[in-house]
Length: 401
Image: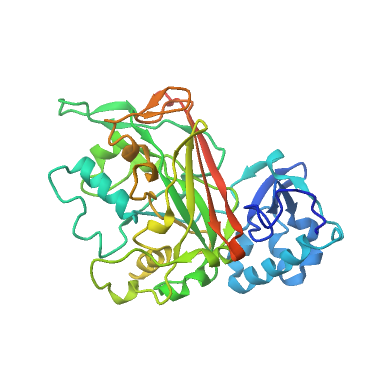
């Protein structure tokens, strides 16, 4: 029994009391930090007094920035107090309840830095087979370190934001001279992102992962494959990735995913000490990718070769500092089966095997007007599902240059 009358706020539903993700909603009173309860949300400024003086002020504003900076002790205290409030029999004094889907989702925190990894072996091997048909699919360094690149924090956008088709240089078959114009091979990438917080830190050990990561989001790191294939040698992704990265508006606390922890996949050799995990941080997250309501794939995050804790350890081992608001993503999540591939590059095998949508149309890559939505759940305590907020975006035509 709870004062929140919402059938989706139940232990057997993804956004029941076991999840309690945080976000920022635009309301008539201005942007407000909120916690999601089923299809509804509780603006936390309305219960700031009930939360207590130490944490109430952290969530009374229009951004999660103060909460991220406060660190893990404050995160634990807030979550414990919120759980008490939302499952209470009677409405707490002053508590508001609004429909989450009736309000605009806003970017919930200031993205300080963004890094993207390449941590699915299935994805990396498939891409290697597509692009390097006569060579080994994995390059020699791949099984020794989490390969990644630094992206653009300024083009990280919240779920629901439209994405314009990017322009750039690309090669036309048989012509050594590149042309300029809109990408013809626009793709999605189904990924999981991790939001950092606490004191700025460097050389973070894998066992300290939870002290520096506030929660998880779903990420679509949109990619222009033809622009990428021309520009990425020798330094890697640049304009093909930097035009837009979409993330969930709701951040699922890392504490809600404790029961979803699983071992990562087996390694080919002994890892260097800084990448060894005493208790692995692999996560059993079950993703689904839809294009225009057609289910395209179900990528399993449990199949990832490198865990997020290993990614964070590698990101900081050289002395790089992680700050509150830093976001890093897993790279495309793909499994061993064809219906578990996390991007159209793999699903259409480089464009040679089109994907058929429910309306009969076919896709090798995304067309203008296509809408991509990524969702996910994880197992929680007693088998209760834990939800991750959807990330979606619609492709708009390119801006003429």
